[in-house]
Length: 116
Ligand code: HEC
Image (cartoon, rainbow, N blue to C red):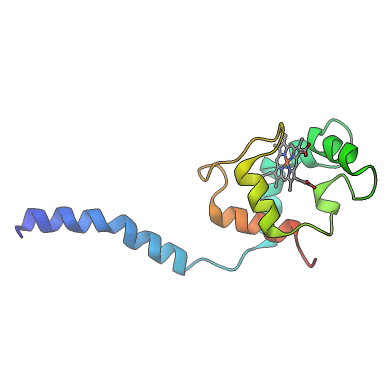
């Protein structure tokens, strides 16, 4: 292998190496960061009160048997939150990894399923 080929090969595996390091150094899911993610991406539709289409849709769906605002729910599992966020439902869009990364989604799931 020439020096050039070696250089190119090293460059090619660099991203994979960096990803491995990033995954290994990832912290446990943080509910505090999850709250910030929620405020940015979800609160416009899911905050409590009127003029929030997510809250209103869930109010109609559950008819008072569950809280309409997601942050007041005690039954949400992180896996369900992840699934909804990645696939979307009805008028709720799905969110890409460039918008909400897997790590941020773990934090969001931890926040919405906290101590439940
Ligand atoms: C554009 C508005 C909108 C945004 C933004 C939005 N949602 Fe939703 N979401 C909805 C609506 C509307 C529903 C109810 C869909 C239905 O009719 O079942 C919903 C449903 C859900 C459900 C299902 C709840 C249940 O009991 O079935 C979850 C979980 C959820 N959203 C999480 C999130 C999270 C987390 C975010 C932020 C990343 C988010 N949503 C962003 C509108 C939105």
